[in-house]
Amino acid sequence: MSSLDDAWERSYWVWEVLFAVVYVATALLVLFDDVSLAEKVVAETALAALLIGFFVAGRRIVRTDDNPVPRTVATGVLVVLVATAIFSDTTASFILFMACPMLFMLQEIRPGIVLTTALILLDPVAAVVRSGWENPSLPILLPMTAILVVFSVLAGKFTTDVIKQSAARAELIRQLEDSQAEVSRLSREAGTAAERERLAREIHDTLAQGFTSIVTLTQAIESELDTDVAAARRHLALASTTARENLAEARAMVAALAPSDLTAGTLTEAVRRAAERLADEAGLRVEYEVDDALPPLATATEVVLLRGAQEALANVRKHSGAESVLVRLSAVDGTVRLRVRDDGCGFSPDAPTEGFGLRGMRSRVEQVGGRLSLRGDASGGTELELEVPA
Image (tube, rainbow, N blue to C red; front, side, top):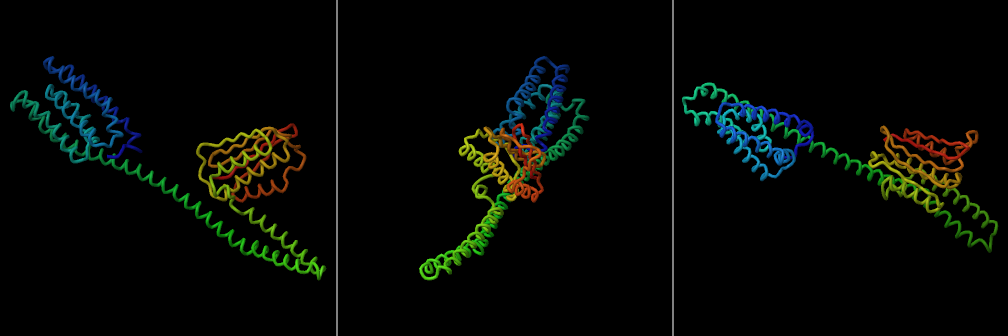
């Protein structure tokens, strides 16, 4: 059998309550039964051994041990102790309300039915052994035994089905979680491959052609320097214009490109490296905090968070005059939040605070449905908070 997980695991306490109630009731009935002291002692000892065995090893075997050897040993011990208690005092047969369900937990349905039927038949057999066929309780005991056998088989079938369905459901959930992780990984890889393909086309159609033009113009200038200075200057101006256009194209492409830091690792690692670079270059104390498990994010959203962290840290280095910086990534109510706080000079509320970098960051954040806020005052300290949906 599989380990008992999911709903069965959560409701297992009900079985332990049943075990306790049946055990206490049976032990009291045997204690006050009208039999000899020796028979009482043997029956109570067998019941006590059953209780101790359950708490020492039985409950662990039932819940978590899939090895058939311990299950077989536990089954044998259970049958022997129950049989000993019933043959010593037939009143101890009430313990069957606990023993029969436990047999179905330890064994598959068919051996469970056989063993349960054998235990239930011990009660009339013990009555015959003690008082013979003239025992006055047999006319009532035999029909009750037949009813109990049918009831136990049906209850055992139900119990076994619940255990199997619970284990199957737990396995299905595990497979779904694995599948979701695999889909997320494949989606990330597919997105990265598509972005690389797009970039390759962009480079071929723009930058490569521009560089080819610059090389051609440079060769023309080299041949014209001594013969046609005017043409050389004209070609030089054209080469300069082409270079500027290529630079503008490169900047536009970089703005839309998934950063190499993300293709080489996770978002948390990329932000950590950006924070460590600031500490190394500017000599600041930089603290980096991140939640243990951030939710999976789309590549575009990760780019927004990384670019936001890079821009915020660049502003700290250029404008704040800070000595320490805190960078924190956290998951909050279905969103991922980036917070960058410094102890620098701050800014005046009346002064313009959004240069090109912040405007570009705000535009990126709005494209993914996020929110950007900047807080601070002239007394010192600035905090940037960027929040995007997970």
